[in-house]
Image (cartoon, rainbow, N blue to C red; front, top):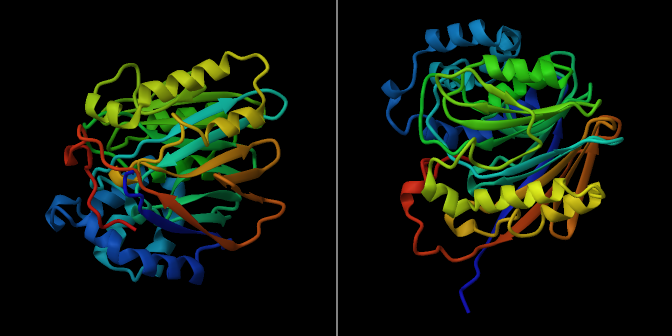
Length: 348
């Protein structure tokens, strides 16, 4: 029998309408780890403050008032401000699966696969620009997935390429979309326009059931496609080692087969995200499923779930609290190498 180890992650639901003492406390908790990650290649490897500010002003100007406020709360330092811009951050690699389901009750379901020690575990409800947003925080103010009060839901997955270019870390782009857009077509256009530093697949769906997936890549305009299911490659597999390690092809095949079922229910779809091959136990190599989320655009609700546990939040009834989630590790297979891991073990 292989030795099974256990890791855990504390998930917290936090509400703060405007940036203030709660966000400042969270930033202070995570900043030492983020600073090590951000400066892993040396300070000169990251862009100076003015290019960061100019990039934000050019591509996502609506975020500038919040950015200025957060930079002040973070202490007003140069490195903190550069980090918060998320312009040209260090590379990082995830796995993840996501699918949009249309019908009377549109639904976006996703799994987030990543090392527990590098995830904030914060479900954050805000109204920073007047529009309410609920999402899973990353990089202090970016989002891994989320929903806004207008019924737009969005989720990201890694796009399966190692290329790194000039652009923003995609979690901030997801924040931007939820802060400024109400419909899937608006969100798709914004995603296609804003430059990103690595390849990602972003799926959006709105309360009308309109959906799209945008293939993002550095140096390219986003490719908007009417795809309901994506995993960790785009038109074809390009990084074969990562594909084998994450079962990206197998997961996508499973999702597409399910979508062909005319009697597919939301309950059946959600249940599949807690089962192999979509659900991953590969925590030993940093690719285990940390949480699953189901976003209901027409209801303004977000359900977070794990095997045997669910946690529902909504704009009408958001309840701050905590859930300690434990994960079991599986042994590292022989064909996996550290070459798959571009992140440093220093993020939260």
